[in-house]
Figure 1 (tube, rainbow, N blue to C red):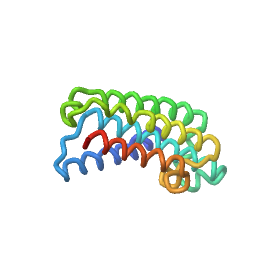
Figure 2: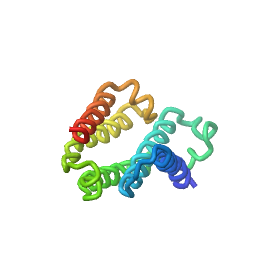
Figure 3: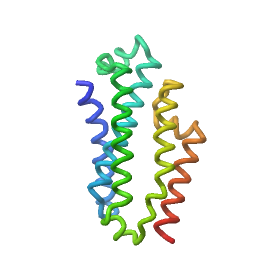
Length: 160
């Protein structure tokens, strides 16, 4: 049941990403959808792990499904989905479809920021027990800086 919980939450992000692309009339890549799914799984698992660690024995009263999770399993899944996110984003940046659409093959230059962001989030989840992505982005300046630099690099590559 807990695996369904993580997938359901993550699919909500995927649906919102697709809806956003449709709303602004942008063609979306299947690779980007898969990457969004992996990233959403990654962040959802991190948040669930944080809830378990912070709430300890009260986790079950907070959210029934938390009783079925184990931090060991979540840690294993975090590594799997982080790898999936990185691989799919790498393929996305190098795909002929994306290169043709944006007119450059240089989007791969954003990968160091993605690797850093994934690794930093994993480290924060392990070290601090916090996994709330919004709190990490607001309170952890190295993560926020990586996201900002990633966005600036994307814009510079796409519009140069």
